[in-house]
Image 1: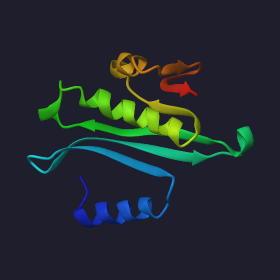
Image 2: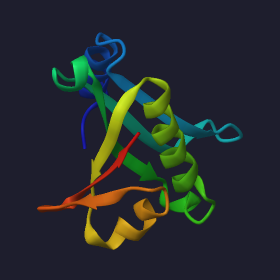
Image 3: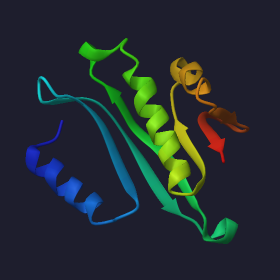
Length: 121
């Protein structure tokens, strides 16, 4: 839990880094509320001729909206967005119980790090 002021300060800081944070939301337009969200964080690398690496972060679906494929929609969107902004790979950290979900998008585990999953483009 954070205050509105803390949220706004962090959002402003993220917004001041264009091309690094892509916060994606699904909104229930009838109720005017955000019901799902995920973030693509883009890291600038020196390797691979100064390539970009993506990280899928903060995937959340409101519990009242689960079972409506919104998680699939938001993860697919972020994964495609990583390709569009020319990331050479995208990764995520997750608990064992959701690995099958991310496997269905093509994410796979990395040797030696069983909580990290990646897709290489």
